[in-house]
Amino acid sequence: MCGRFSLTASPEEVAELFGLEELEAFPPRYNIAPTQPVLMMSIDAADRRVGTLVRWGFVPGWVKDPREFTLLLNARSETAATKPSFRNAMRHRRTLIPASGFYEWFRPPNADKNTKKQAYWITPACGGIVTFGGLMETWCAAEGSEIDTGCILTTQSNKQIGNIHHRMPVVIKPENFDRWLDCKNLEPRDVEDLLQPVEDEYFRAVPISDSVNKVANSGPEIQREILVKKPDTKVKKPADDQLNLL
Image (tube, rainbow, N blue to C red):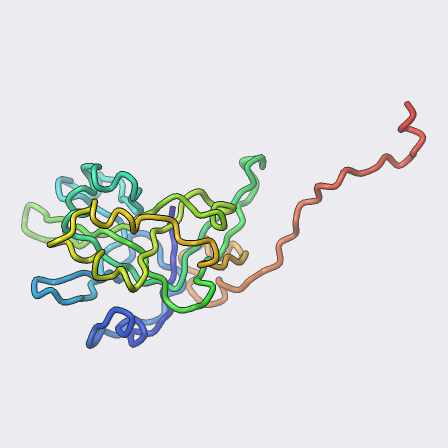
């Protein structure tokens, strides 16, 4: 799952990565949350790459009232091509989502449900921009108004991220941008090979404070690494060694 992410790269850096002539200015965003606008790259009618701001929270075209529909933040890549909610978008509206990294939370499997989860900031080990595979849909109201919505595709985590969470975003690398965005000529089955977990060494995960939990906290300090005390798993000896004889 991916419920929060960040994009702090400059518009110039993003434009260069995607081969855009220009991109409208935007500020660094450290805590992007559901329902907020996110930047997605797609192909327009003239076969040019374009950047579009869409609301994070996918709404299928057949939904009558978005207010009564649970927003879909993520889509499982394994079933997106067949699920009614995502099928059309997977065929016709595949997108790329630039990010500086994403956040995930971990709770030990045997921990009590009241145990606080540990937050992690997960970013490319070599720095730079990571690009998630995404889907976009334009929802049209009865009176004619439109809302562009989108979601992030996820896949089973690799071994590294699997130590934190069992799902992770699909990563589309630059050499595969054209294939992924080519919805005119390539069907979902033609890009199925891109829906795999990225290699283990691709990301770096560092523990951070729980300040990221609040959307209002949106500065660089929420990504600051903290020290996490490891649980004591050693078996303690009895205070009186004679007890061992009993």
